[in-house]
Image 1 (cartoon, rainbow, N blue to C red):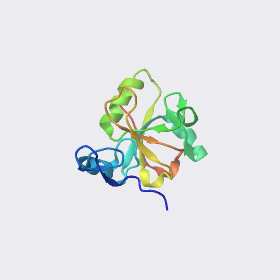
Image 2: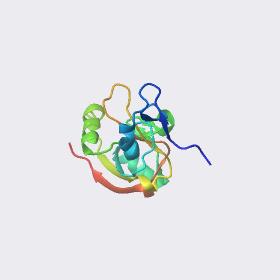
Image 3: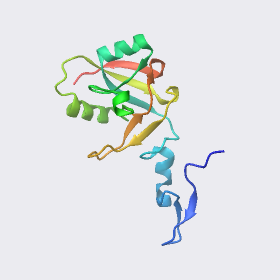
Image 4: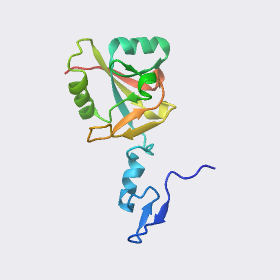
Length: 149
């Protein structure tokens, strides 16, 4: 049996229970909902912005392996994703502003992925983004919607 992801222990300085990572107990609800760098216990639909041509190629291949604009899963080690449309629009403004090719929004059912998804804060960012650590099976994509700015 593997070790638990976290366990309660006593803090040395104030004798309050803390997680073994050193986080105070008040962060437990965030951990259970999915906290930065840890797998989430509550699965959700996540979003990915893709070039239409890349998605069409993935449909033919059976899986999607593009991490972000011009970078593959092999290059990055994960596929970039967004937790909601607000994050996705921010990504589109920052990284896809000069893209003229058609884009689509992939809605991914995390339960159908078969690989880990971690919430991580990229360097220089202020919010956590879901990162998919493996190829995205076409069968895990529950909807594909054209993206408009």
